[in-house]
Length: 305
Image: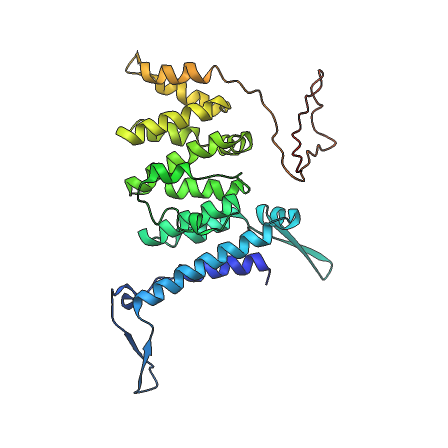
């Protein structure tokens, strides 16, 4: 079996519904084989949960290491894998979604609140390709989220993992987790243009705006800042249309939304590609021609002395 598929299989097995015994807070679980009168001792429930979390962490670490420095593996995981099998002169095409969509579906089965905080932390570590203890436990130990988020650094490596982190954590019932997520995205955005480009490409303007309309207090403030940063990089036609539609309420204009629209209209960035490391822009033969006025190319050199 393919290595990436094996990792997804491990995650799927962790999502199997657990027995009531596993939810016990303490004590030794006693199991008895149907063909034996002698009971056997199983690990305490707490230890089983710790083992489960450790297994989950190792899956993310292996996945991150497999894609680190390997464009082939990263591309292989990100896109659909198409396998051709020729039998009796007939060609059968099997499409397997190995990538981030499969990862998201597997993680959605791990639905407990405790699991979620570990999952969010592992997704952040995978996004930055940094599995240091700080990121491994980022959402688990949430004392002083404002100060903790300020310590975040680095460049986002895997946009697919960032997208899953947003989709799973944005609807969290835990207020602190949501606030930390929004603050984290705002800080990541300000760290580098590369981060800004990745976050703005996720299509989360609508989600941020929708959450802003129902948010309260500190959460609302950080969402306003995040939305402004996203609009700095521009919004899609669909996102812009939704903002204009929301500005009209009962035949009246909402001044708060109008202020957001005015800010978005001052976007400083034209449409552009942001590439890092070994990257390429490939145009097919039937693609539209490049702009008649040409293109601008900017590159940043880092010289280590």
